[in-house]
Length: 147
Image (cartoon, rainbow, N blue to C red):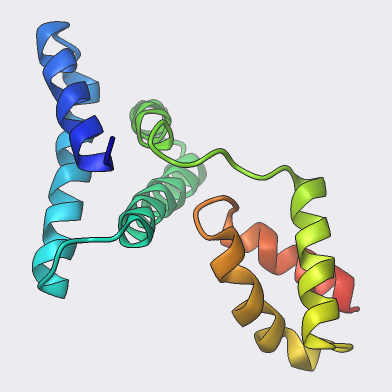
C-alpha cells in the first residue's frame, strides 16, 4: 500500500472516529506531498515521499524546541501530538548503536580520517539512513568517529 493510500484510509477512519487532531495532521501531510508533486511536476517516488515526511518531522521538532524554550506548554502539547501522528508514517528509526555501525562503515568506505573530510562521509552516509535517523544525530556521530 502506498503512502497516499494509507493516508486516505487513515483519514477516512479519523473522520469516522471524529479524531480532529489526527485528521488535521493527515491533511497537512497530504498537502505537503501534493505540493511536492506539483513542484517536481511528476509522481513522487517512495524516496520523495520519505523526504516530505522527514521535512514535516523536522519542522515539528524545531517548533517543539522553540516552544519549549519560550515556555509555551499549550503549544508544546499540540506539537507533540502532531509529531506522534506524523511519525506513524515514518520508517522504523535506527538505534544509536546501529547508526554508529553504519557511520563506521561509511568512514571505512570513503577512507576519511579527519573532520575536513566530513562532507564526503555525510554524502555517502545520508542516502543510506534517509528517514531512518535524525540528521543531527548522524552529524554528531560522524564528528565523534572522525575526531
